[in-house]
Amino acid sequence: MSPGPATPTSLMPRITVRPATQDDARFLVPLIDAAGEGLPSYLWARLAQPGQIPAEVGLARVEGETATVSWRHARVAEFDGRPAGCCYACRLPDPPATPTATPTETLPGDLPPMFVPLQQLENEAAGTGYVNILATASAFRRRGVGRALLASAEETAGPRGMSVIVSDGNPGARRLYERLGYAVTDRRPMVKEGWRGHGRAWLLMIKAP
Image (cartoon, rainbow, N blue to C red):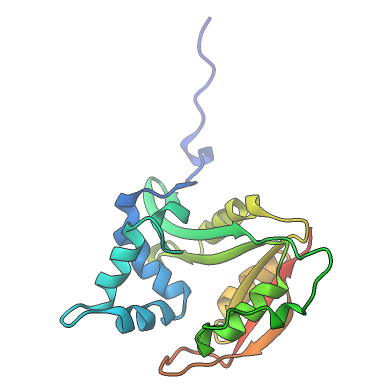
């Protein structure tokens, strides 16, 4: 039996999404910082030892096993075989059947003030799949990488759908999520301390199932 016709190159998928490996750590660090509006590097600078730069702290955390930004939690998009973007997504716990407090009241007692509004919004998103980080490398923007990553992240969707928190100073990210069915459901003023990120508020966006 003769083989069937070859698939034309123009029809072959150019974007694939795979689990990250530890070798991806150096690629992930700047994307994590970009997705976080520079907040990650601000925090890494506070953890740095004398003579250590923030990116080195970030790399150690990404290469490790336990941090939220560990490579183990990441997915990498490749465009024609080259790393092009990343995302981190997880399923948030369902809200308790008989809550004893409102979601904004259930906060760790030692939570730094700048994280309080973020945690409040995350609590509001209980029962969703949560997109913690999503970023595309600058050379691959506007090629569908963000859409492919989000489609992969949505495999974590919960009974209440999907959620993401974005800065109101990042209209490009907000437009991407709105085009894909996400809508702003709540917001909290930012607490910046020494961080100089853009925006004044964090926006919770949810995509209903």
